[in-house]
Length: 68
Figure 1 (cartoon, rainbow, N blue to C red):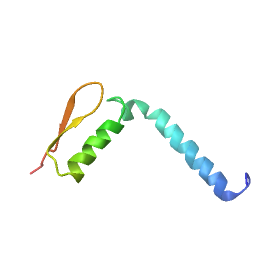
Figure 2: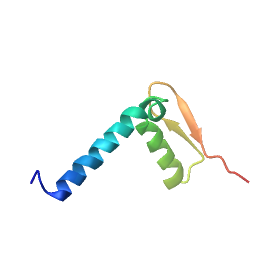
Figure 3: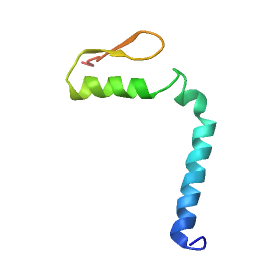
Figure 4: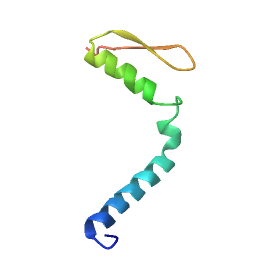
């Protein structure tokens, strides 16, 4: 199994993804944990809300901005 081409490609993709995350961690996590922001954005999109609260350590509100 360790010598199969598919396994090597999977390991290579995992290593490259890990390196990318390590190099870009300051950008990805600049506001702390990005998961609450992703949940709030999905609420705006899926539930068709204009404003939603982000659950986290600080109270932050996201709102949809319409570009015209």
